[in-house]
Amino acid sequence: MRRDARAPAGGRARARPRCRRAPAGSAFPACVALLLSLLASPAPPASAQILRREPPPWIALEVPAARRAVAFDVARYNDARVDWSAQRFAVTVLLPQGTTSCLFARFSWLTLDTGARSAPARWPGIVGEKAPAGWPAEARDVGWGGPEVGTLGNLGLPLLGGLQYALQAGLPVGRDVLYPFASTSLPISVELRKPWRVGSAWETSLRAGRTWNLGTGRDVLASDAFPRTFTAGLDLARHPHERRAIVCDLAAEWGDGRRLMTAGIVWRLPVGATDAFALSAEREVLGRDDRPFALRIAATWLFAGLAEAKPPVAK
Image (cartoon, rainbow, N blue to C red; front, top):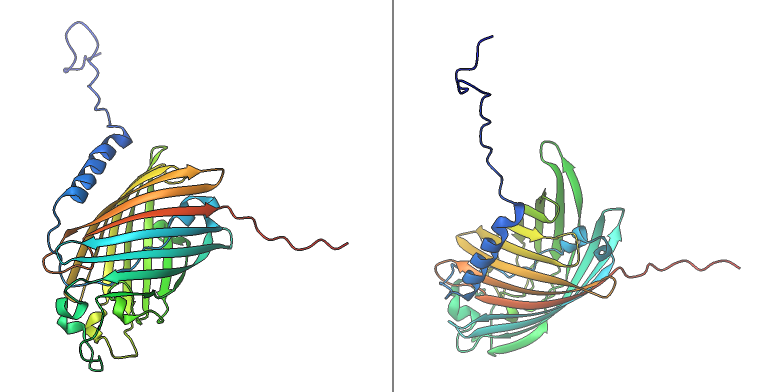
């Protein structure tokens, strides 16, 4: 029998050295360090304004108890370069629909302080034909943001496999003086999300979506104030399907000549048997001209697993 030419003369062929795969979580500390450095770095100017739109509550598809929950969110937006700041308090109600999807409604109260530069001073093209002279009259305004309603769940498509979807719409009952955080427009957005499990504790996902802003009926803001945009995002999460999790996120939005990119991190902790508390930070990291905010810091308390009302028992 002929001996393999690659084997040494007096023995068996040597086994080829095998390349070890790096553990799934080895890239996560580097990702966290990169995002934290972006959050701490000086923010470059961004492109033209894009309406601030809060993301869907994806946690309802990650933590089963969150499909029947109430979330309280407090956020602060800041941009020291133009002396702008905003505070937002929101309540999100989630209710199950079927076995894997849910409905949600979000209500928010906003405070906006524009300092010495109003929104028309930053973006002259947003002012409509019927805007009063000197609008807005005050540098600081408060009021309700436009309520949002939507649904999210699981979806199966050929070739793509299991996907998650979110459909949400903003009701046109906000206040235009709170632009770009609220207005009387009617934004409608559709988003698809594809998650992949990496090992037992990690998950990464890609997102893509489209937003249509149907404008306002009051003519205070021009149509240029309501861009139609595309969205895309990438996140990496550790223990995403538990109440204790860390999520790093990179998101982009563009359309009608506007661009916006943000990097964020969320730290979620369990509270009690079913609730969760989360701290998050988001930084605008890429752009050239103007931006709705430079830094967002938020805290969220999720009351999950609310008991379902049971029908009375007939005596």
